[in-house]
Length: 235
Image 1 (tube, rainbow, N blue to C red):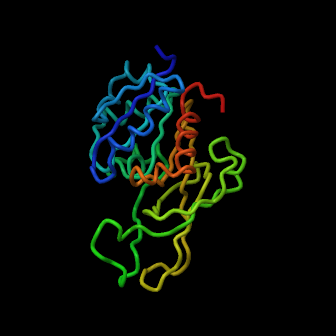
Image 2 (spheres, helix red, strand yellow):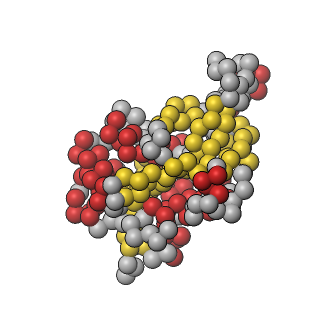
Image 3 (cartoon, rainbow, N blue to C red):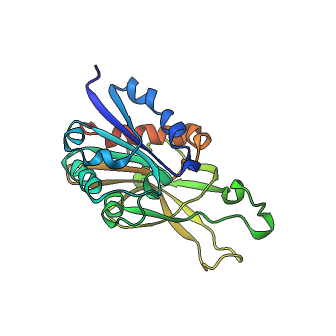
């Protein structure tokens, strides 16, 4: 039996392929000494005994709802040292109506701007824009992003509301455009960490689908982030 325990919680909107994306990381976690448990509902968070023995929670639940007891259980677990980690809408577009959850995560997806009107075709790629994930000065020295250069992606570019408790390791900038209502470039965090009590939170906004998560740099950032967030991490 492995010495550490990871809990994957997945579900919500199927467009983010929560099963396929989380399955990408199960072998990695097992190879790094975790017993992996998978749950299809966030209500596991209300089980205090299960939370007490969990070192890392990996969540991929876009939108959906959560009970007050489950949010309290999640917050209590992170406060006590359980790591909480995820990517894209599975962590920053979860449980939109719950302010206690949003405070824990430190960011909320609000938009992924679409292509210019003349490029819209009415399919899922309308919001796939070429953009850059820019590593910050803090990120260049952080265990999660050290040695990774700015990376170019063509996928959804998240506009995120956030607060200054986050340690931002990478950003992305939405340019001012004549077809959009904002009047100057807007920079959003793209990768961040957050300390919460004895626990750690890790968020990466890239990760719309398995193809994005298979990008070598994105995958490295996520894998390092999972280990960094876990209880007992030496990083």
